[in-house]
Image 1 (tube, rainbow, N blue to C red):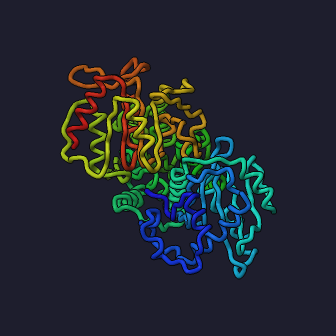
Image 2 (image 1 turned 90 degrees about the vertical axis):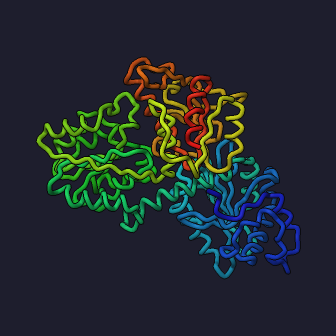
Image 3 (image 1 turned 120 degrees about the horizontal axis):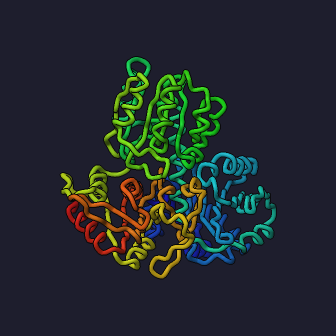
Length: 529
């Protein structure tokens, strides 16, 4: 995914500022690489000239005096929630700051500019950059009008260029402009999807529609508990939200605080039963409700039985191959069925089978990498890239060179460490507040763990597994590490790898430093191509 807009470096913008644009046309831009793929249907040449004239005001006032010429700005930045005139991302004390320059003509008036700034702060930024500081600058007819910022948690109004300069001269260049803007639009997409589900306008996959029709036809009639255990990326959460909003008298337990907070589901806490907390859910009045649980593998079997016993009906969405925490569900689907049947309630297994996150061949390839025995998949890998690394420098260079959103993850067993060294570089391990990892614009020197990875997709996923080893036992191959001492921990490690390997939409990149493990993964990868 590319940034949607026209990306120009500051040095090129300055050249346009110095040039005479009075008789300037699109044809004059031929041969300039930055304009080759840009479609002028969305931004005409006169608007571009206006943007450049307004930018001249800021450059002339030394607003960007401390910013290197290599800094990237995006003109006409398009997202799923709004369009912005000129944006970039800068650093303030090593924290990313979103800079939005909004431009209006006199005809449009200062009042419209005020409305625009207000909408940005109240409506758009919470969806695009919920945890990022920002500066929004308003310009009318080549004249600076006002700016607003929340740096230092203050909603501060800036009325003169001198004060704005004092602030911007504390800013430095960010190399994460593209990543942050892509991530912002990803977050906007999540919220847009959620709103369309909420408003019953979302365009669902046919498989999801078929599942919902089955649930709608049977859940109040001949089925007490429906169990949808499906692989990562099959759309379980989408289906769970559809059930929550479209079935009557529902209650939702979404066992993922990160996802819950991203969607701002707490607004339903008082009007509809909706929470991420299993304790709150079990203590709520759910006796006459159709209870929906997403990420049900995060519960114990006893907790599932309690909900089934207490509720009118129950719909379970989850993936037993994503159970890896100490209290996570560690049993088979038959065990769930049998425990519920002991209550005298009827059950039905109805999985989602198609992975929507990436191609079917990629899904089979990931299964091949983590399988307990060698096998040759019936479909070769296509449209997706997998790289297996043994050399840390090669792994790190690939991470740096890939464009688009990317993150390094490691297994949860490294949670007690604070710093991890890869090749010659040091990385900080993200802390306990894992629910913010998807929405915080962290620097690329921060690594997440398996908890951070759940419900978090990136374009290019990097997985660093320095202590991963293999053991062979009774014809099966098991992954082990320093913390795997029994069968249950071995299975949980396998599930962690399944989670980590299935985050990337475009590529998966794995680094191991054990030679036997590398050779195994490399051998399996070669069967895929």
